[in-house]
Image (cartoon, rainbow over all chains, first blue to last red; front, side):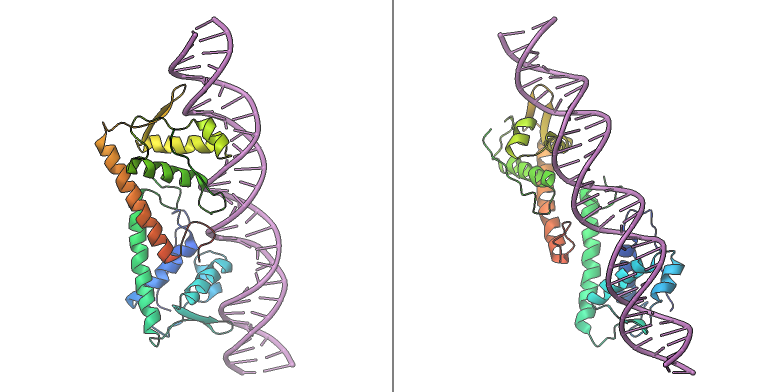
Length: 116
Length: 116
DNA sequence: AGGTTTGTACTAGCACGATAGTACAATAGT
DNA sequence: ACTATTGTACTATCGTGCTAGTACAAACCT
């Protein structure tokens, strides 16, 4: 893999969300290419000092969002360009999340404890 | 008082938020007029079968938002038109909340357990 | 002043989400 | 077949937000 991910457990934002968004962005922006293999669940768990379950949750949701494909014994891979629809949805998702965050911030109803 | 409020504890949306938004809307739309007295904390608690604290929280936040004025021994009253700025903010707040809800719904990241 | 009505403060319970510990299942490669 | 490597499932813990129980304080009224 080429990308290195980082999370901040004290940011108030759940780390699984931080990681999920980072990967989504990386894919949307091309820093992660289609077909490229993502770090192993257990490898990432070690690197980020997290539990495998936390990583697994991220990968599971990313698979549900059709951003990656994952299977036991093989690993997790960025979905090929074969699904432009999925890619499109991913971009939309990233964009709308940014907007959502902006709205939340403006309204001071952030989901973390630092809100307002 | 003239308005009767209702909440649904099983909707997944915190009842204190439901009530807060209802009152905000009622004020913004004029169903609650400036100077008008709101139901007593304890009266509303009885009517809605809620704890006084839950109502108190709503009133406290509404006071912070400058929508109502409240004081012990007297009661809680809708703020007079003397503060157009506050009224304006209230309207904005109501509007942006609606938008926020729409965004949340669209993204399927609702705050309640029913989300996607 | 005394009692009544109002909001408020302190505390606890409860549910839910996020994360961790650990054991399991599926695939790949030899 | 065996073994290593991958993701997965089950369970527990911990923190946090929502609501409740109850006692308190402030203001009004006679």
